[in-house]
Length: 296
Ligand SMILES: [Zn+2]
Image 1 (cartoon, rainbow, N blue to C red):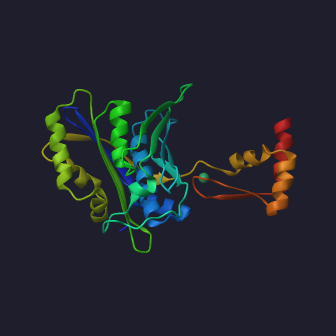
Image 2: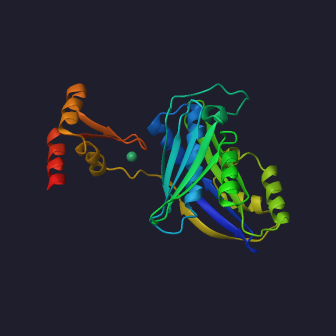
Image 3: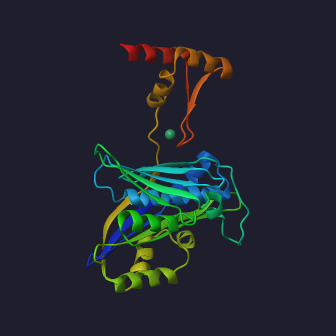
């Protein structure tokens, strides 16, 4: 069952814990289709993109943006997701075809594909001169654990992170989703333990998402007998910010010689967007016009 992707954010009545859950099956499927990822690469990419979208929901202003970069030493290469504050995200994995056999049935070898030597970086662009940059060493390459470590070490927030992607035998995405539970300053350990226990009693997040796309009921299971309010609900989508104009500028910045060389070698002027795989073709005249315009 494919339903639309969305996110739900809630806070308990005593304002001690904030819970954000996301259903992201559709957008992870779109990322898979655009990048033609292997099963394990889909899971790695889907986890990073889902996490970034959840984190983006904490940005305050409409123009704010967040980038989540996972640079492991595994064969996946760097994985980067970039999101805005209103639920749009895009992402790529450097080696989409990289794959590894599962060691355990039903569990994709994401940690090995990503590699645990390396770092995770969060860049928040909130319109200030210098963007916020937080970086931690990877713990396992499984992404969720690495993010928990990021929240604790870089933002001093104890957090429980759960991310999951289920892949069908035909490589399409069966289900994807994520959950981030963050303790507010001075939170009582009892309430945290309670929520953690509730989560432990649930199935893994990917199985939960494959059984139900009703986040309200998932949230109710997480909170148990703790009273809470839903503070945000919004749709999520795979959406890139690239465009013809923007990519034409890249070509227009090449020297005349480089342009001629590109045409000679490939017979065309073409740029593809890393984030979404969209290919843009230009005529030589189009780029020349842009070059002259830039000089004016
Ligand atoms: Zn794009």
